[in-house]
Image (cartoon, rainbow, N blue to C red; front, side):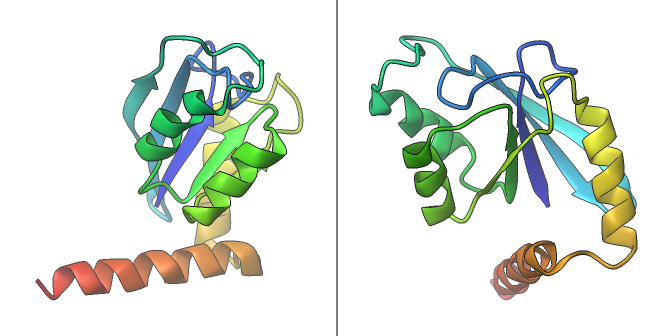
Length: 133
């Protein structure tokens, strides 16, 4: 499953979703995690109520299951959920991306909570569907 992180330093989850200049993307499985890509965003990213800045971010995360953020507005969260991307607020801006990735791998190996099992089931259904082509 693909998991994204809003970050300003590629180490911590320390950027607001709407004003994030970059979002790191990883592939996570019970076997571990791999860095995939850093999406870079420019233009007017100020926290000023301009919702147009969200469109490229939501499009970039279209095949992502989870996005970890330091903060996120209600409208942006709703739009992500509508696109089947689960936003999760980090415990603090000091929280490290690697720590979350290691926790996710451990959780996937064990007994994931219901919300994560649902994401995994949705991912495997879409993978099964893709394999039929």
